[in-house]
Length: 262
Ligand SMILES: C[S@@+](CC[C@H](N)C(=O)[O-])C[C@H]1O[C@@H](n2cnc3c(N)ncnc32)[C@H](O)[C@@H]1O
Image (cartoon, rainbow, N blue to C red; front, side):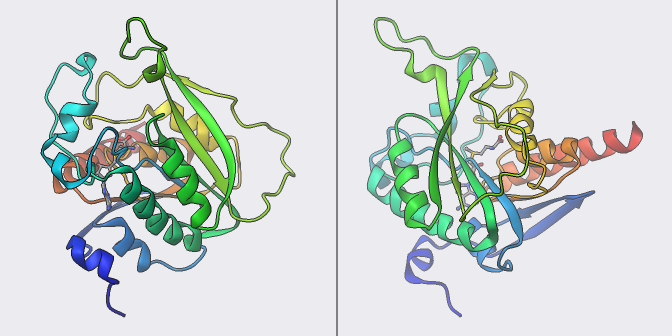
């Protein structure tokens, strides 16, 4: 079957390379193209962190580097730009609905989706998740211990959100509640400008024992895969940027060697 026109227009590359460590798989490619090659119900949960497309006005804003936009002074270095951070709000909603529709097919009944977003495009993710078929189940706030101060206004950039949804009914046989909020600082030592803290991801994923097979369509610096590895679970990550794929692969290999040596 040929790719639908939307993806043809975007001229995405086909799958290029796969790196495997014990339990974790990192694929270099475009997530919708790669997800379409995967079997139905292969995962328990999709843990995703797409480009936020915050403060963009469509194709004209492609010139604004994602690296510059999301790099805070604490990182004290210049990052390479990453892919896909240019859509305006309307196209961002449509695009999220496209990849989330694949995510819905790939999650087993009773499985779930979690998607990071900040206050600016939260509405797009909530809408798209439901278009894709998931039952929207609310947001878990990520309260950062540090963040850009905004003098004279609410500190809205001190938090981000994890939008959560489920595919059908989730079994309620486990007696643990999920976290009310996630409270971590963004890592100072990072390989990706929007890298999520490993502890935060472990906290998010570990409360359900039946989330053993994890998919991250936007792997970035492979934080989800590292968290899964530390939890003894299996994760598959997909990353489009060649630069970040290489860095993520190196990080994954070093985590795997350290675990073997321990
Ligand atoms: C917000 S970052 C993810 C950061 C990651 N969670 C971490 O902790 O390092 C989003 C990533 O998705 C990648 N990306 C954007 N569009 C993509 C696509 N269509 N398929 C696969 N990866 C994509 C970008 O290159 C970027 O590295």
